Length: 140
Figure 1 (cartoon, one colour):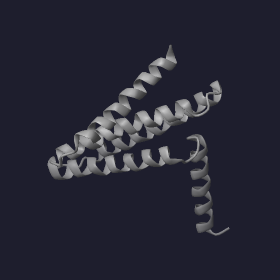
Figure 2: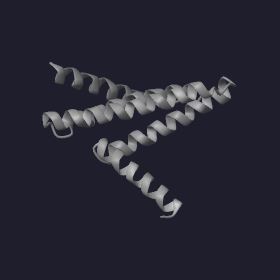
Figure 3: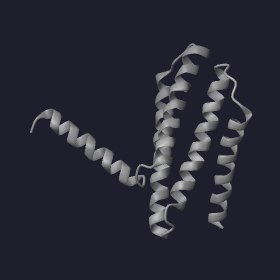
């Protein structure tokens, strides 16, 4: 087997395994991934432009946080499977994380001096708050 074929097979298998663990790749997962990537890039931009100091430890910590968020989605998928609730917990978790990432995104834009329309700020805050309420209702 050629080395490039081995790497392609390994990466493809790993990608399929992750997609399975997060309950498939749909619009919610795509949106979460895009917002996470944009937030990370904006965080680097803030560190470079505003703080004049890109710290690799802080960047790595940011990547670890993003990884922990993916683990949260995996746990929510497993909870859905255990309780037979369809995709309720997975979707609620992803929407909550999109809200959190959106708020971080808006904060980073503010550090860069970019104004964000109020309706966008309100949408991310509402998304985070509504999903907090859903989680609390499920726990009762």
